Image 1 (cartoon, rainbow, N blue to C red):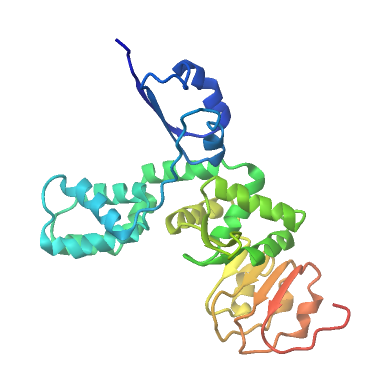
Image 2 (cartoon, rainbow, N blue to C red; image 1 turned 30 degrees about the vertical axis):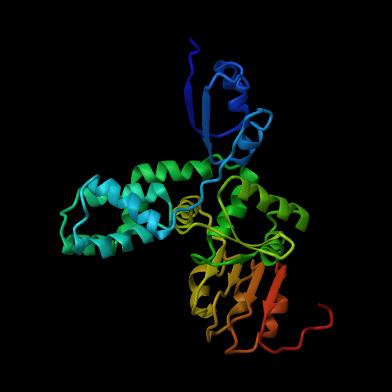
Length: 318
């Protein structure tokens, strides 16, 4: 009688780790009915198994709103029905998890520990993201993706986490920014860094061009929030995102340290006081049109990236 086995190797972090342990499972190409399931966040690990004759790979997408609610409901109520008065609030809480199963499981645990009343759930719904981010198990599991990241990729990833939530980060713009910031030597290297971050499952493809190339990326909201906390812990505050950009106010706190100023949405702002930012490398004020760009911008010695939409005369030396 043939003995068959079923193995699960969960959350594998490197191709080398798989090479070290795969011999223990015997010949993976034997057709004896045995199966091995490997889960990983790293594309390199998936590629390292392609030598197997019978190999199937599946990329697990983020859950949609319906799937998120089904998972949350199952974790909170099991086989029981969800009370009708809690259903809408529960769906809102599930949606706030942005399709991330781990976040949904944490939210379900929090809900299971509170009173099953409409008022309790409504109060919890207002703070659910904060509770998820503060959960020790959630932080531990999510930050593994960051702590296993090669050091040369960390500044690029933290830089992307500085963009607003759900912001569509254009690759063409991002590559130029990474070069200007000095994170990479050239645009080719910047493009490779982005591919590496994608393969580490840290950034998501938002849109593609008609030729199949990647047009833009985004960062999952909860991962972004968690890594922004990490950035502060590591004293990594290199850029500013603000809907009402008044550099006179910002200068009081950041004039001696700020490296990048980027405006992400149309606003009426004051750009006076720009000369105080002596170390500024990036200035993107395309959406700031209340004032003309001051000529003092061309006195900023370290400036490497300039984007503006307001009318002004660019010096011939530029």
